[in-house]
Amino acid sequence: MPAARIVSRAVVVRSHATLIEGLMSKDKGRVLVTGGAGFIGSHVCAAFRDAGWSVVALDDLSTGKIENVPDGVKLIEDDIRSASTADLIHGGDFEVVSHQAAQVDVRLSVARPDHDAALNVMGLLNLLEASRAAEVRRFVFASSGGVVYGEPETVPVPETAPKRPLSPYGVSKLMGEHYLHCYRVIHGLEGVSLRYANVYGPRQDPHGEAGVVAIFSRRLLEGQRLTVFGDGEQTRDYVYVGDVARANLAAADVPLRDPESIDDGAFNVGTGVETSVNSLAHILMQAAGAASPVERAPARPGELLRNCLDSSRLRALDWEPAGSLTDGLSHTFEWIAQESGRCP
Image (cartoon, rainbow, N blue to C red; front, side, top):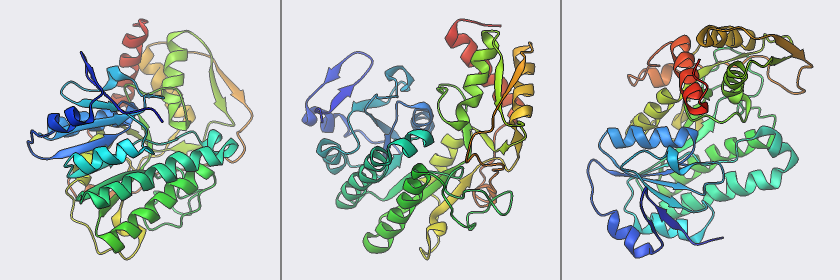
């Protein structure tokens, strides 16, 4: 693996000593955000920065982008599995690690489960071991309420629902939660798992299931047909990325229950509202001010019919989605239009 690079808007520094020296200023606390140049991670960086934290982003830039990283956040280019990443945690005096980096493609996890496990399991273990040794207070883990539960028995799905992942990606996320629980019981490392619903918003790439928002938006801007799989009545819980970032900020300090099971350190992050793919397409057409033909494609094998999360545990901590789905989709569409140079 290549040596770590420290990246800023103007300079690239290769000295690890220079990095540690540059981290010594401290405001509210110091947090490391893995995947900090990615879609969700960059918003998490901004939330911590705006709350007065000293923020360092770690990203291998395989999918993340330097331009996503907010001003005032130092970016280190490195792999979460590397020894240099462990060294960064050992010497960085981090109070919190917010772990957003992951292999997130369900279909890729089916085709290459070894690759999925290498990143999502072995990468996590490297971070946990380093965090334990460095006496990091809290480790926040981005899990997935869209895959760990499988096809739910009850909707909205509570944290205590049965865990029935149907893909290697879901298995690796659930395994990560078990590792967090284990490290808390054995080593005292405080672990919080945030089980995300389908996250959407600015900076999203059209990959994965939740990427349907970005895919539909780009097709609308280009005047192309929208492809809907099956009858389009399958539902998801779409949560705005800014709300997810605020959930990560809350997770840094939330009081934890005694660790009797993985669910005691877990919080669903969703709206509790089911939205069908057909409804999503309609709302985005309204945001675009234009209609596009909808073509039907065969239903995808193994696709969940319903998914919606009960986030009452998180709401009890004064977290609430900041706006409606219509507001969030309109804002997202406007951002995609501006980025693509195709303002409607």
